Image 1: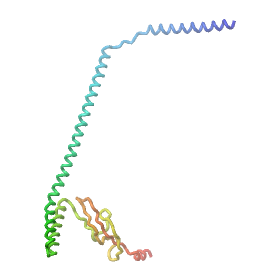
Image 2 (image 1 turned 30 degrees about the horizontal axis):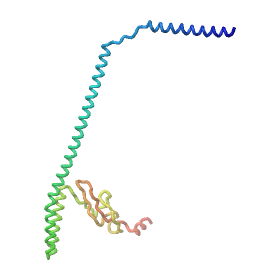
Image 3 (image 1 turned 90 degrees about the vertical axis):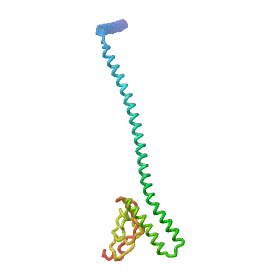
Image 4 (image 1 turned 135 degrees about the vertical axis):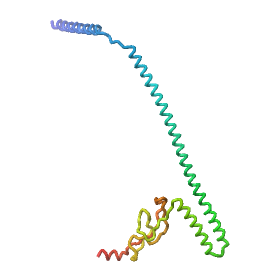
Length: 204
């Protein structure tokens, strides 16, 4: 009896499921289908094609701009190099007379008996060279007797002195130079320092 009831329940479940499935399919069949507007589809396709074409145009424009920028950069670099070469050429042309005078001084020194005249000739050539460099913007740093400044000087030696203030430059070992207010070589100097005995006395 139990077996028959189980079969009946299963058959009833199957029939119900088939009934509801058929009802669902009937409902779907009764719903109206969505109509697609052909004009709208055509407009979308045309807009898509137009966007793709504009995208290609933008890519080509970007390529042209990049090529123009590369050409401009190369041209600018070449112009900078030409300007540097022109500046160097101008300076070299100014230095040629100095070179000529040095060669004359060396030639005369080989046969000269008057050492003083040779010295004066070399001094004149050196002054000629300094005048050219000053005209280009080079300036010697006046260090002797001034207070040590790490922005202008480089201390190579320190000596104990009592006759000058501590930190004063007592000797220039190699001159320093500015080029248009920019230090291109600091002066190598000797700087005064208080003797150790004086420092010990001050501490007491």
